[in-house]
Image (cartoon, rainbow, N blue to C red; front, side, top):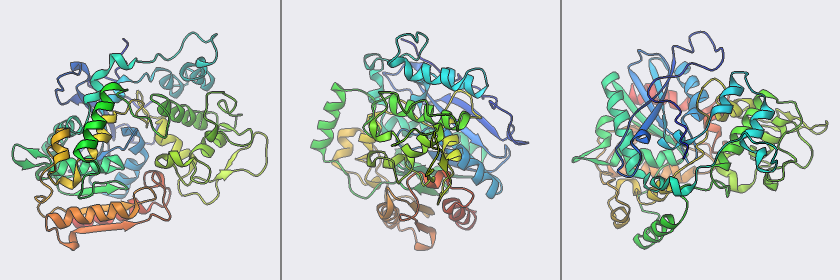
Length: 456
């Protein structure tokens, strides 16, 4: 078996020249994480991508969503730290990304490989037997421990990060996007030797994700899902695309859109690319990438990855992408997922554990329930958060449900309305737009007010 570990402990250098001061303000490290019994010790790690002034005394910890990785917060983190004084953003890299082979993506970032060589290495070899140097699959049979990477592992890994943040900073806020919102709820309400995780936090931020007051799974359903997981792959299929292909399609597409944007699409005629991701005409690389992710043309199964990024041009051969009515510039979206300035990482998690999403069904905003007993969860302090300020942003996927979940969480702990900030942009923002909207970003604008007014 070949495990490709992104980095053992220390930070990386930025892959390409960046703005003045960017190197000093960006750091990535793997830290010792929770000791999960079945996992090889070298994988018991949690990664943290830190962006912002090194001497900042306030830290915002962000948890990525389903199949998301730390780097997809990178453009957002730079914007937040630019707009808010004395804050650092710490983006969580879950342990599964250590299984990824980023070698040729890194070569492209350094100008040492072409995008064609990258596409050959990660995807095109599957239909071209002449390509002998290529990415290697990790058989499910060799990573069965991934079935144990659920909420307990995620929360215990986070505990190590929060403790580290509290040793450095005076103020620590935790937030999450999508599933990361459920993880944030789980952490804040988790029982750590009789004390809720919220005791080490100064605020909560929910970005189109969270956990409502009732479990979404019954104990019987949870048991059935666990049995299915035991007999199946450890990894989640995202949008109907099996691991690691959802990550590879996105990362390859993002790199093509960034490094060869106007060239004819490398993937358009590839027979294994799902038909619902293909433009009706031959596009450029960025045209094909935009068509697959823009809310107007992307399939409903990929709603969790969609953006408002423009549209295909009305003419041209190949057909390019144009900026029309965009909220998230396509180049910025591609940067979030390709991470062109970061070595050893991209914005997707190729191997996202099914168990983590399964466990989220029992969190129930920290209300103890029988499903938690089945799933071995300890998110039981939903009524003991103290005077915790809470911010929630509802976009297209979570919408009002996210805002209602945040309000319920506040009500359970008698948090006054004055400490609750709810922002409804369901009709305007897709699920990813809060992370990639630019230059105007309603999430950042309202978050900045919350951090300044409620957290300090």
